[in-house]
Amino acid sequence: MSWLDILRALALLLVLEGLMPLLAPARWRAALRRFELASPRQIRWAGAAGVGAGLLLLALAAGLAG
Image 1 (tube, rainbow, N blue to C red):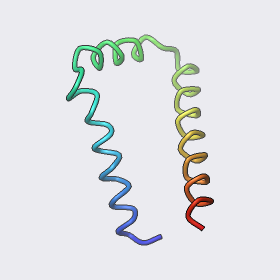
Image 2 (image 1 turned 180 degrees about the vertical axis):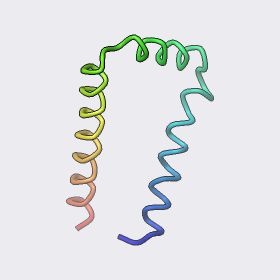
Image 3 (image 1 turned 30 degrees about the horizontal axis):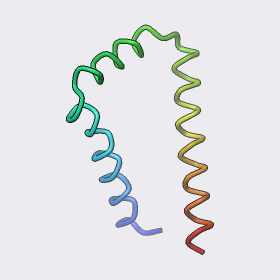
């Protein structure tokens, strides 16, 4: 993996992160409000689920690539 790969991954992250506020700002705001009301434990579980899904996708992509 090169620095260019990391840069591409970060660029894709920014694109994906920007889609929701761009396409549905009211829903994005509502989601942030719900997230604000969540307990720290719920936020940690959401973070862990995101990390787990990301790692699973990376492993899947690595398996498909070689």
